[in-house]
Length: 415
Image (cartoon, rainbow, N blue to C red; front, side, top):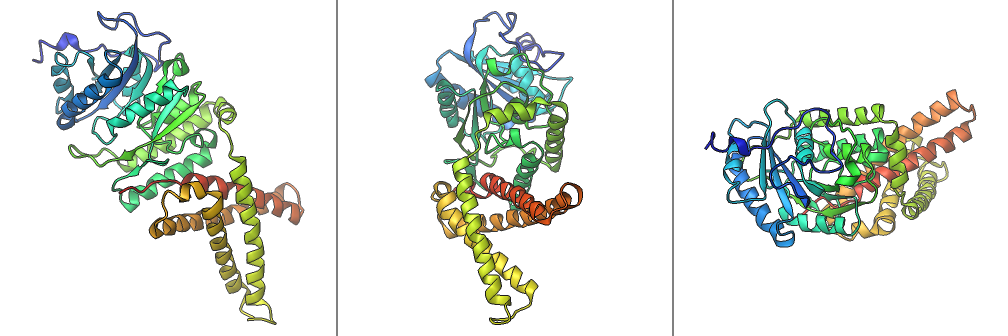
């Protein structure tokens, strides 16, 4: 089998990681354009690949008969995943296989696959069945309805994770917070910037040289290309049943490296993305009003606890208690009003407790930011304590709102 099928493998493209505007004419004998090309990057997925190809072929054939292709891009797996996929090509005529022997990395594998793809819409899905294939229909529908990019998200209605450890959840949240700090104009456009399950119009990414790091190619697509409208579809990230997980601390380091590279090498990132990212003004105003109510609660409780005519408790202790009660007040109002549409989806008490704890942590970070900005403005910009304080409050408010919007009020737990 190894020798008889060698000439059926796709030639690995070389040179810049750039998607051609039109599909290559010499891809294969049948060089007609098609609607959809789905890339399946693999490495040591011998136990999964046969099932993945079968499920995806049967599913896509239902709504795009003969107008699609599956491209397995394997990084020369020692278990010969590519060989298993290659042996299935006779049974699945829409299947094509590439074996990369000189390059490594999921992101570059996806781009090499897109470079030989014939589709007007280009997609990617994991080869381990952690991405539910049935979501493809909803993603394609979003593209047909006008979206340039359709992303499967764990953090919108219908999305979630099946069984993640507390540490993995913490790392995921931390990665998104870092993204919002380093590259808000890119990361802020989607609820799940670390998703590896999406599809995009060829016309939006053609002609742009991509330079991804690690696993998170979605950041590169949003940050460097001409993607306009983005749609998100909820999906539940499932634990793999076969094979071994490839998620390690190294992927999070590469993610941070990627953020910094985008920030430093692409001046257009912030400008381009800000033009396409709608800031939720209405929700922000409600958040601000709730914050104002918290100021009154804080002042009232502080007076009742610390004033010599009332309880006369020490000032520091009184302030800590007053601040926490004000945070609790703000959380209740935000949960019931500002983010009511999200909170209604998960009303169980343990979900509310999780949101409250995250809200507390974000507000604590906001307090640190408040103090830092206050001192920076007062000492280096305007030596006026009141103007400096207003500036600090403004920055901390935007921080609290934006991070809570992306982290505290979103759907992540599913049964």
